[in-house]
Image (cartoon, rainbow, N blue to C red; front, side, top):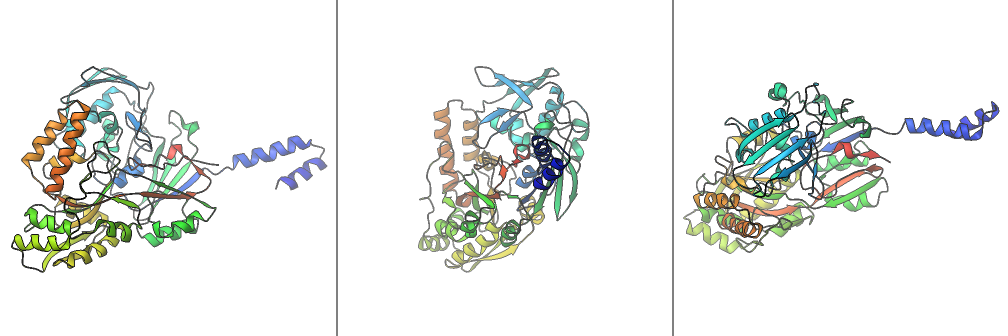
Length: 500
């Protein structure tokens, strides 16, 4: 193309430099500005403050909706809607100063009143926010002017800046908040263009964004592919440019050897577990829950399901988290002990239990491996594959299950053990008292020591069979820039991406 145009321009008497400049300008104008990103699960809605699915945040967090603070790939906290903040010496009163001129997609101002509304909504009695406890710890909210919000906490919270950077803390426009699940209105660099449920969702760059010129991507199509083989095929065919957290461990060498791709392998704060319904008989007997845990060889699960990409855990905590205690020796793999515990609990084998499996590859493949292990100690785990919406309504919502395999991906979700009515059905006054003490403790070393006690308690109580910390794999087009390697939260920061 350059040669033909240059020859023509020379024939017309135009300078060579001018012809080359014109050709390069034309090429620059056609630089790629679209992206196809694939996800394993389709979100059930688009309001991260009203649903528990991590897939919601994967779509909307930092893209459609924004938060006061922004969490980076390295877990550092940076300003976002709040350009700065101050805190009192007791770490209880925070003053957030917003960027001037912030607007929502519908033109309404994003000011201190909108932030106040968002936090009060998250703490309300009818709130469905899975991090409601974060906002319930707020005892006073005061918008001192349009750009300043003062937040006073009941208990000090060393994780507060991180937590208000998570998807559950997005700032919503008051008049449109009720319809955000299907018609999201935020302050982010993208707007929802279309959503063909079951197929794809399209985001378009919002020209009214405060820094729209810095957003390289004009349009992003998100596809939903749950089958592991189909994920690999879509990447190989070039139908997908980017697949974060892809199930490609078995063929990773193939991608690494192909110059069309880049492969990023990073850590996570996720915990993959066999969740147990603690109130259903005979699972209300701690000996039965311990037997289930002792029947499972964690390393074999990691090798068979995750191709070795994971670290064993003995509690609901990962080695990279502050205050981690290695509890893999608690309820460690011991089939003989599992059989003895079942006998001690008066269980006549075979014991039949349901095992609900959501559509993620790690759950479906893990179901086969774990069911085979449980069978060896006399537990028949009847596998039932369910779609994500069924899992959310039946398992998470109605607690209609015995066992299920799931990854909890949030980094700061240990408080779920004290959450009333949570789907595990775990109720422990001892844990609740310990968690209250943790929340009331400002001294970091003391707090971390108490976190160790909390890890030991839920390990001893065998609330779940704790399996492993996943290692996430991202496969992308080699020319794509701005990707996260480490993933402290499930977010796809689309405004940071560009093509080389």
